[in-house]
Image (cartoon, rainbow, N blue to C red; front, side, top):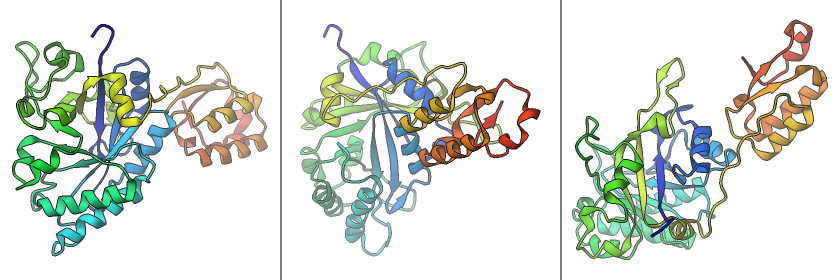
Length: 341
């Protein structure tokens, strides 16, 4: 397969915390082919992830292709009526993410210690409702040993595209403490164009489209901020996934087309009011650093600019380096939405 490669994917969840994900870094990596898109956790049961809306907004602002996934819970919202719960959860998932996603992903595992796996009837109630609402057959995100524990569901699973978690261990000299691979390239050196070991020789082989091979990827290298909040350490690990088939074929399969790459943030020495307005309208990615020549603006122009940026949802995320004597602009600065450096 000359000049072909597998797609590389990172999935993120609420454990990254508010401000923990570096979307500019993710966009840069996607532009450079380090990986190809993100999958964002939408919620658990009937509870939406607390930072899902934040993560989705920043992902869209940065122009990053993405899918979402939903972790099902037979005990949510009412422990005494699990089958009905599953239908309500399918409705919740669609309400959170909308009906226009190219694909929906369903996470099947024991969601937390005091819950349990859904039964075959419960899962099929959820899946039937999700298909009814979206008109699309979802991707099942799970492990083979989970599927074998749900009596009778293995045959059903064979009719869905599968995203299989199967953690293989690094070769000598490449281990981290837990053994999982930390980088895509190290993994692909030994496992390029192969299936997860747990599906080989089973009826699931032809249905697997993606393999989660590590939950210990190098988080700060790929996507997470080293520090967040009050100098708190950011998330150190990342979930790493690869497609089974060639990248372009896979991307068309899950998105219906080849998604556009994120656009690079412009590098300008000084921005005029018109240029900043253009950036706001274009949905510039958060946390971009620009140099602002404050002398180009009048106070009333800043007020108008602030309103436009707030509507775009990106105003608090633009860092500005002002190279002027700020004492001359005290009144103007009072109405600025920017952080100063």
